[in-house]
Structure formats: C-alpha cells, structure tokens
Length: 113
Length: 108
Image (cartoon, rainbow over the protein chains, first blue to last red):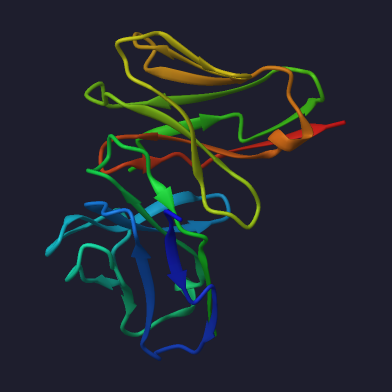
C-alpha cells in the first residue's frame, strides 16, 4: 500500500531531551516536507526537501533540523525541545514538488513538558 | 507572511445545502490551486485542484472556481452531507503555503 508513515504517533517528553520523529514513504517520491499544525494557525511548513541531500527552510524552521540521506526517509530532529514545540506534526511527500498532490502521513502529536 | 487568506473561518450548513469557502492569494505567479480536506485525527488529503487556464473544475459534488482578476478561488460543496464535515485548506505553490483552514460543519 502506498503510504507515508510517521513514528511515533504520540510522544510526551521533557524540555531539552533530544528527539527524532521519523518519516518514511514507499512511493519513490522526490519531494518531502514537514508541517506543524496548531489551532488557529493552520499548517505551517517547517522544512522541505526537493531531493536527496537537498533541504530548505520553510516558514518556521527554528528549533528543528532535518536530513535527507535516503530518498524514502526524512526525519525531523528536535535537538532541545521546548514547550512551544508542542504541536501536531505532519510529514508529506509528492512525486516531484509543489505542483503535485501531497500525500500526508497520519501525524505525530508531540507534547513537551 | 501569510500568502493565502481563507474565509469564512467556520461555516455551519444544513444537510443538502451549499457550502462555499473562499481563498484569496497575493502572488499572481502561482499556477496551481489545490483544496485539501482534513478529518479529525487524520492528515490532510487532496480534494480537488485547478490550474489558472480554466475558470472552473467539477468533481462530483465539489466544484472549484477560479477568479484570476480577483486573485481568489473558491470551493463549492453542493448537496452538503454530514460526512463533509471537515477542515478545508487551500494552498498556493510558493513552497506550498497553506491557509489557516475553513471548518465546515454540516448538520442533519
């Protein structure tokens, strides 16, 4: 089944404890991105990647890191999480970029205490 | 900076009625205008999209209309059903910037 998977789906952590949210797609998509969703603010892009080894900042990159060493994986790294990073995170992928249908993962709900 | 503005923020419609939600954008260079639908607890999914060389596109009960001069595109949901209750996001293609979403509630 063609899909985008994220792990973990739910995570409660404490301030300053490094964490990684994994994202993987099995559709051979070139483009991948991360969004956070907060009430009243909609979806805001954190980082995106047009292809392997190519990543760029989105609208809200502060406090996040990403890497794209393989085409299928695009992990989101929070080196020192803070409470303002409590949010619902979505990974998405598409065939070639912005002009194609974005396929979203199921989301990761992160709480930073 | 916000490149798309959605209105109304929320909408309550009677079953069988027409839901209309709007998306206004700023940059005239955009050339792909999608609407995504999100149900509670799920990720967004593409509902319908239009390119500016056409003014309207219909897929079942969903119609997207595009007004280039007004820099606006709209989603019409005909014969709205309770299963259409969701949040709808428009997006424009500068790194794919999403609007804040329109919450549509269809009451029986």
